[in-house]
Amino acid sequence: MLTYDLSERGSLPIYEYLARRIRDDVLSGELPAGERLPSKRALAEHLGVSVVTVEAAYAQLEAEGCLLARPRRGYFVAEAARGPRSAPPQPRAASPEEERPWALDLRGSRVDTSRFPVAAWARLTRQVLSDGGGALLSPVPHQGLRPLRQAISDFLAGYKGMSAPPENIVVGAGAEFMYILLAQLLGPGAAIAVEDPGYPKIRQVYSRSGALCRPLPLDGGGVSLDALRASGALALHISPSHQFPTGLVTPMPRRQALLRWARETGGYIIEDDYDSELRFSGRPLPTLQSIDPAGRVVYMNTFSQTISPSMRIGYLVLPPELMARWRRELGFYSCAVPALEQHVLSRFLAGGHYERHLARMRKEYRSLRSEVLSAFRGSPFARRISIDERGAGLHFLLHLDTDRSDAELRERAASLGVHLAFLSDYAAAHSAPEHTLVISYAALSRAQLPEAMELLSRVLEG
Image (cartoon, rainbow, N blue to C red; front, top):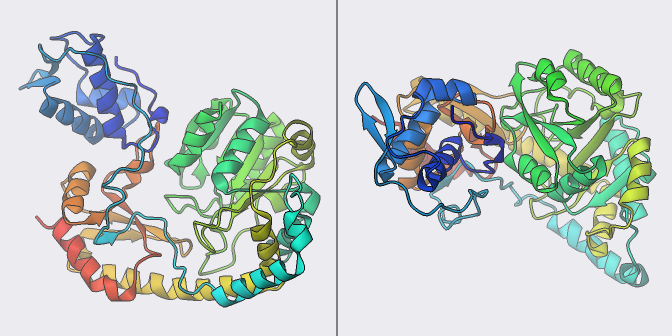
């Protein structure tokens, strides 16, 4: 039976990665001419993916001439398919298509920067330049500037009820840099469990940093406890407040169970709280870090979702044991965030500008989200969709009633200038339901909604 590690696919859709791996085996001769491939259902069950995914991969290879489909007999390796082995598949780099100016982009991670208090930021920048000439030219401590770490500590205490001493905070250049640090901190070959479906870059960065990623399936309460216990993982990376892309919120009983797992196994939980500030209804559950008496939780967050993706500043709150290890083993790393940005951000936080900005953003996004949802519910295709939204974050799920595969819908959408993301795009080792869109709405304008509904109607028609 064909066996491939789908967790190595990077950002490629599962069907495309599977097609590449089979193509490599055909071209190298590992799958000889005339050999019959497993049935679509058998291979899907073996790999833990949907039959539609295997069907799409086989159809692609048939179109390329690598496979032959014989009625009632299955798929066979074509006689003339063997050739020089292609290069190993790599995570997909940004292509011209991904950089094209889309008529409608529902996949992008952009946020609305039009309401950012530029005047306040500019004023604080001028103050720092006027007041801190010597400080700006001095070396930045390895953990980041003390005023910024103190401002983050104060914000977390007042806004989230967390105890996060500045001594336990490490400032770095965004989430991806933090993933690298964590992989090195946990040690070479450490097994890190991740959510599946989940944010692909987490898997990519951990894997490239020498960690062993263990994608775990999700149930109604988040990561499956049985799968976690069976994984042998040293650490678990999760977003319990608002999982991407499913939107799941991990309930308190599951949080307590995860903390028990960490205590009993000596493992760690990496709590990625990337957009928890953008909650529009009800009170958020307390962070895992704030209810962890045993020091088994690493808390991490950035300012990318709340200020701008170009704000490459993130931070870790390390428990005492890991903080001591960081100083001992990784304290030689220089802080990669420029001093000017750290000084300005520290004043932005300490002066209350950030909390006021968050309040405005929540109000604005709540209103925009309501209008976007209303537009979908009043659209010509309203009877063919169902919406799954949790009143938080900058995305929601849209389930489609359609006979077309995700690959067909994506191709049709692209031909109309529409950029779509499907839940299946974010799956690694476990299949995700097809016909489910991940709608990122933050960059949509209200004036754009009628055109957006018209374009989506054309994508779904027929």
